[in-house]
Amino acid sequence: MVRGLLLAAALAALPAAAQERFITLSSTTSTEQSGLFGELLPKFRAASGIAVRVVAVGTGQALRLGERGDADVVLVHDEASELAFVAAGFGIERKPAMYNDFVLVGPTPVGSPRDAVASFRDLAGRPFVSRGDDSGTHKAELRLWQAAGIDPKSGTGRWYRETGSGMGATLNMAAALDAYTLADRASWASFGNRRGLTIASAGDPKLFNPYGVMLVNPVRHPHVKAAEGRAFIAWLTGAEGRAAIAAFRVGGQQIFFPLPAAPAPRS
Amino acid sequence: MDELAQAARLALRLITEFDSALVDIIARSLLVTASATVLAAALGLPLGALLALARFPGRQMLLVTVHALMALPPVVLGLLVYLVLSRAGPLGFLGLLYTPTAMIIAQTLLILPILAALASQQIEELAREYGELLRSLGAGPWHAAATLLWEGRFALATALLTGFGRAAGEVGAVMIVGGNIDRATRVMTTAIALETGRGQLALALALGLVLIALGVGVTVATFGLRALARRLSAA
Image (tube, rainbow over all chains, first blue to last red; front, side, top):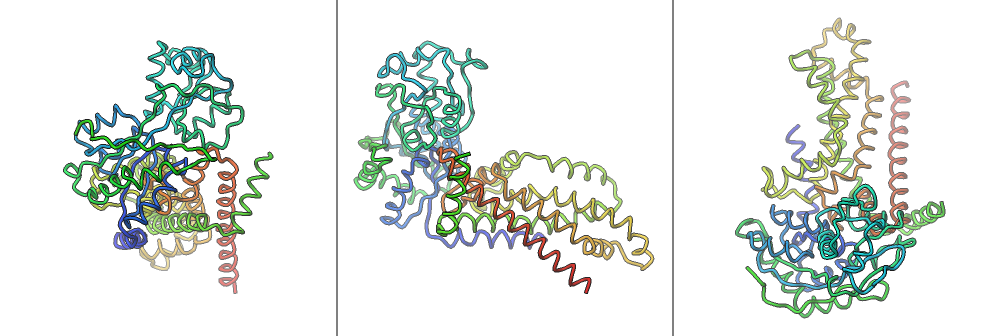
């Protein structure tokens, strides 16, 4: 029986093992759902012969996958937790990869559409749906509440709802409830169920949303495919990757902008 | 309701166009779930027979446990399998996380209690009916169990279908241990979750309709086989 189980498991693993070299990339739902990887990864594969398998989760969970050694490369968007990840020795060779911005979406524009903090001050008491999932977007939202001097938790049960789920599920809820939510530009641009939702506030530099890419520390996790992972990071932040990021469009709109490669701030 | 009609049209188009990404996902769904059902049957049916026929200390407790595990949320099971298969977990060295194998393991464990519980119930009923006869014929316990499993094969086919259905429609566990990786571990249910997240509700619903059609297909095939087997055994 046990032998049968192992045999079946081995058989099922065959198609995966027979494939060429690959790395596992833990990243965020925003990059996956916008279709960016569908555009980038085939180009990288053509250039390097390395396939990239993407596990798309929130930034917090993506970093934890790296921590446990379940990914080779991490591409996420929360600078503070990325730096903490590197400082703790879980990741190395962190590089800025690209950026876009967050947008506040809701049923009607708020008073000061280009001032994010003032917009959030306006929001107190209006229905708001929060990711509530420790994602990069959730952390950005909490920073904005703090800057606006509002404790959203005080509205829990009345106007503030934490979904604890991904960007898509949260946008679906906001659309159904005529509520506001903070979304990353990529998820918003590729979201197909907007109903009455529109951009309520955007363009403030405080809504800057940078993505960083880093290798999971191969000293801590010896099975990490360091050579292939480094090849991917070098390609993504190099001329070809930057061009591919800049060329990606959703509905004719550029969604991601390559970041100038700077030396890693701390490593 | 407009969305439902749109989804139905989209589903039809996806199927008739033989969309290669969809075919890939359907094939993987069937492979994973069929493997899990076969494995769970290989383990669960004998376990069910054991629970029905053998008398040993702790049997009641095992019986209660098996029944209680039927209600285990797939997400919890997925999390447990993830922790075991994760690189930081005890079986991490196998490198099975984010492979179809990991998904088969999770689904097998998910439906194993269902198959064992349904099989034990079925065999207990048969044992009441035929136990005397089997004993008078001098059948040992192994022989009796095998005979009763065979006699109950039509009812057990329904148990297998129940397990197959539960595994095929499950999303929480395979999402965690498979990772919903495009062209590697994406199956029907995780694809539906992804498209719902993208707000592509019609496409998500269309995939759901395809999944329902698959379920109907498998059920009809099983019923057909059952009818055929009945006719052959009656002849």
